[in-house]
Length: 113
Figure 1: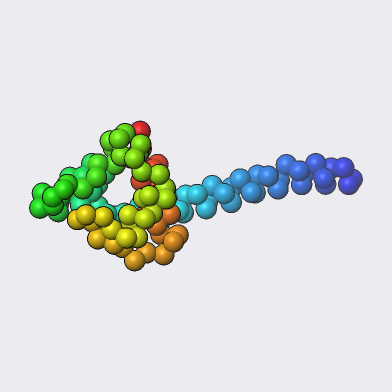
Figure 2: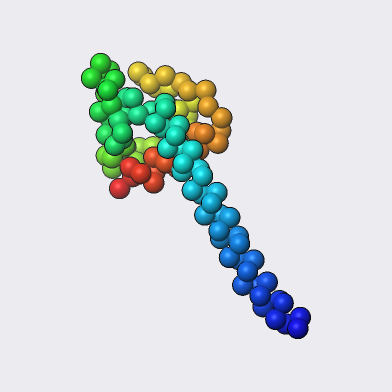
């Protein structure tokens, strides 16, 4: 009887942990999408190509997150610094650390090729 209980636990516990991690991962993505849509999309665009409604009035133009060169130049730490501190025409955003991480997660999963 105990052998069966241990076997069941050995199968169930990893499954529960996997589902929990998927749920947490998905929620970061959704939070990132929500914050991106509210804070970034106006300049960087829905598709992350730097052609949002405000982009025409900005010089230099907003970064294109679809461009592989962007991802060669920016790692997560640099992206976090720019989001928090701003850069050139981009203002600094006062976000919670988990919101900043979520935006980066969303951008990485959505725009990085």
